[in-house]
Image (cartoon, rainbow, N blue to C red):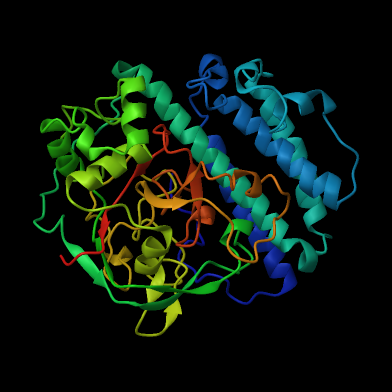
Length: 429
């Protein structure tokens, strides 16, 4: 799937009201086209299959996208009465348990449902008071983007169960470079953390100044080749590399390698993928480093010290495209970590956005002055001291949810997502 046609534009260009309506419509059309492209060859069994107890079937996510769009834009904003009430108990996020979401309408019915809702949404967009609602419209666009990423990795989980039918790893003929363990020094000082644009979700706000002492951070994410060393020396058998919680998790689950690990892969220069926070933390201990805090990651990724300003993306304000990072299902898998030299940050970090999400050591919580939007359950219920922050996005992340300030969060035991990591250190490297 190719990047959207406006991907080479500059973020948040001044537009008049009609242009903003057309921009939103184009974004939503492009986003939906990418969503439906994931279902091109999906059969009924795949549509309804629950690939993992923690995740709903991909068909549920598709229907939920339509349900959420109707709830917020048609019911709450346009004042329309609820439609397709028969779907509501099934498709609401706080409705049926995940294991009961397998009893879905046909693919054709869900497609018809989405089209009916979308036609009404676009009709309302022509008259909607966008000055008051644009942040919500952008939230809905990102909501679909987030669910299509879940669809992507749930499909990946299904392929993992049936590897013969899908060549998950392709041959990578790129040569290894010699600087994969290089660390970059980030000087002490303040930077601006967060985002206050219309795109910013509630947990990214408000922007604030943060001071950090000097630290070092890996230029690249940890690669398959590097992680293989940890496996080969018995890293999964040695408790000294693991936190007490991580070691207990390891013993209870019998984990011996990352979820998406393949011994025969020729992609040694790709980031390791399918690791839990516990595995990432253990590897960092193994090499005498640690995981970066969220603030350390974001400063190294977004701060332009020379101009004293934060960047929306590591490279500046040009929106993500296929020349800058691996995202939007362009390759439908990871790429070598040195594939996108033009996507580096001002400090020189490579492969920062896209490819794999990166675990940080930070527990997910609200920033000082946090205000929930559009509802308390989007972020605030997860401020429970049980979820770790991930940054950066993956190869399946859509462009509308890709920025340095974006915050993802999962339990430290989760490894089904497209996640890797890079290391940091407070010592001198």
